[in-house]
Image (tube, rainbow, N blue to C red; front, side, top):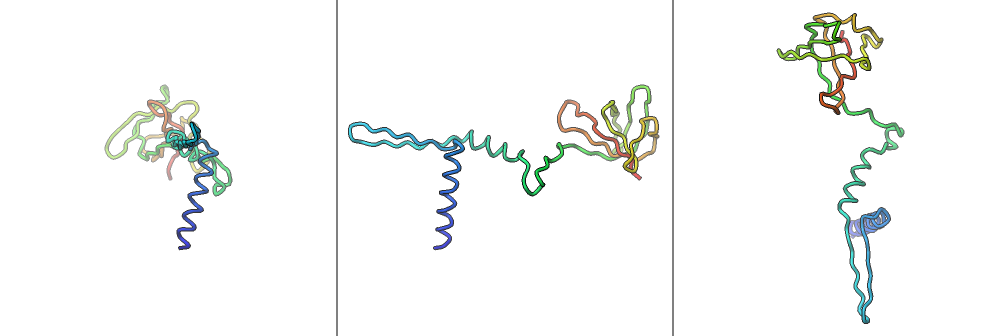
Length: 144
């Protein structure tokens, strides 16, 4: 019986929050002594609010916004083209050329280093932004 009471309180709470957030609408009309009440549910507004709530910093994270999502790959440098600022990286027997732009940070042991210090056979981790086509290379970290 207690469970039903908790469920009722939860439903009332969700209903009140939803009403004030614009998820639900109530329309009433009175015609010739007859009252008509219409309840509307705005599914698009609910979906938008729940999608936005995932972007809001939580108290658990101290209010800090999470870092932007990224893609990380690890591999071995097979070639360095200093003129074009390109790295050829081998990952699982596949090679790909990656451009290292001016905004890309390059670090070794936590300290920044220059592109010219990169050498073939170094193990590196590359971090890319998840947006853009092709995705931007954000960071090159030389592995020990």
